[in-house]
Length: 161
Image (cartoon, rainbow, N blue to C red; front, side, top):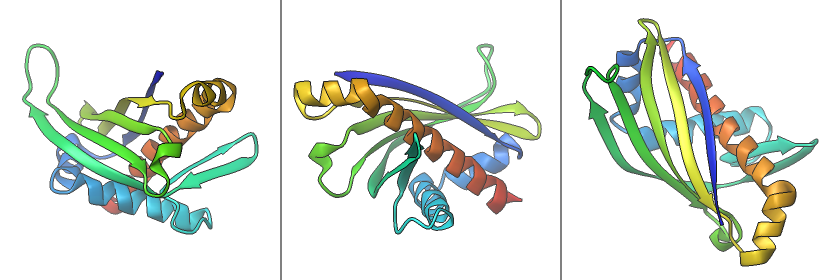
């Protein structure tokens, strides 16, 4: 079964500044952002992390940037950059969902930029995975993706500050 997730955050810097930070090597920014957050949380090398109902979940992930696309300003809306990404667990990837997502970056104001991530993950392990996802897995996935986008936004705020 495939499940959708949509999360967002913002960075208090101009779109041009945020785009310039992400365009050359978005994967490095994602990796640095999540590793910095993992160190703050005293988690050893955990790149994807969530806390659900007082229980910490974390795993190393491999993030692959599939495509970066720049859409010029048009009648349909402001300029935007989209980054297609995919991530999977580094160890035992068959036990964890594979996330396929698009991170859209666009200006909110002249000094604020939206980070908007829409993605889908496929639940592993067939019917057993569907049952786990229904009970707690989807909440863990949502919390992990929310934490990911929050970590990226916080990292950009700090690095661009």
